[in-house]
Length: 211
Image 1: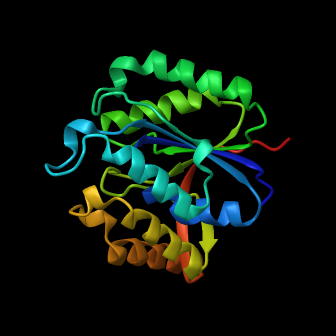
Image 2 (image 1 turned 45 degrees about the vertical axis):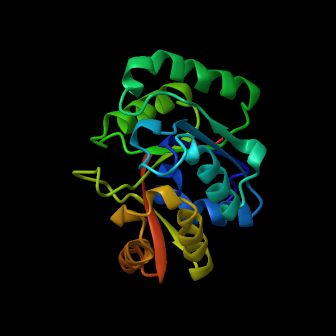
């Protein structure tokens, strides 16, 4: 891979790690600089007993496990499930970032077919802002009624373990079954079987730019 500067767009904290944590770990290991933008910390959905802003600290800790620099983690406070109400503001934030980082050569977004309203908003605005770049959509199978497995990234066990360790940082979200180590590893194995390797993550190809 020749990607040097990568942007991960996460509607909510944890989406990027869930969909592409192994790939992010591998990219950083191979020398890429990764930026991570989270648009909602879902304060309304934080369980009782945790500070309302707990997901801000958890996403920084989780991405750090993968190797993302803290200064490269950009967190916004848009209201959960209402990102579509502020899609123009989000687009302007993305364009502002692009102006400062026009050498981004890969953008990771949710699937354009994701049924969650926040996810589809970030996917669409991501395409609008970065239409001249290579764009891959990551897989969140509980939100995807269909998903085209067009690109596979071969991963090693160390990459999957980092993904699992990163997701463990979301202690406030530990009740969610899709955060379990068993699920993460099982999906990586299943995708690996499809690709003829031990572990893999799969992506939809939105745009593939060769320059």
